[in-house]
Length: 247
Ligand SMILES: Nc1ccn([C@@H]2O[C@H](COP(=O)(O)OP(=O)(O)OP(=O)(O)O)[C@@H](O)[C@H]2O)c(=O)n1
Ligand SMILES: C[C@](O)(CO)[C@H](O)COP(=O)(O)O
Image (cartoon, rainbow, N blue to C red; front, side, top):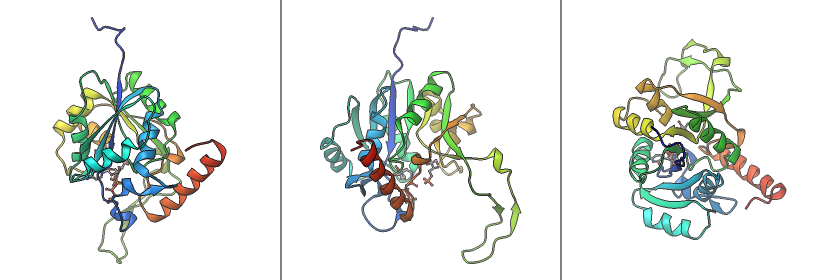
């Protein structure tokens, strides 16, 4: 019989090993600053802000783990314990390395992009609550504002023929943190081969045939991908600092 008195423990894995090519030249994206503080520090704070998160595993650029550890040691993150491990060539590989570092006793795993530094704690908690309620995989997502076209890809600069218009009401733009029952996520990473087109962890779980559910995301959980995203992130942060006492 399962021991219902046992505490469910939640860890967050933060892949932060990407270069940030689309953001332009500079330091690895996670280490670039937002309001004077590295994006990664904001992302770790966002996870540690949830009372449910007891461990944060940061996946650093492959040759930068000691520097990232030193950087994080300069900041405080409430109660959460911190681990830093080196990442890999792809996001999937980096997440895998984070999962490998999880200790026994963790039942729920969040995977959160360092590139989404401003996700509100309510969104984090909603994802955790849905996993704890029994969903093996949970993604926060928003309806789309733009109409989406499917095209036949052509080389850059050439007009691309439209092959369809998916029904927008059925589409969602997916964010992080994505939350998982630990065993389900490990099985997905063990089973799905890199390069099979999954651009997020929930996509790996879908390939297992396991159910994935969506909960409401948040506009401020957007990903800093291109230079304009950084302008928006600075504005959101400045507003929070002025109104909420955010650091
Ligand atoms: N080898 C990689 C590639 C990406 N990531 C992480 O995955 C998250 C989402 O990726 P994305 O925004 O695409 O970041 P980059 O890969 O850095 O961006 P780009 O594709 O523009 O280089 C980021 O926090 C990034 O650091 C990672 O840990 N390891
Ligand atoms: C995981 C993700 O942020 C969900 O939207 C996204 O799929 C990452 O994609 P990227 O191409 O690595 O930015």
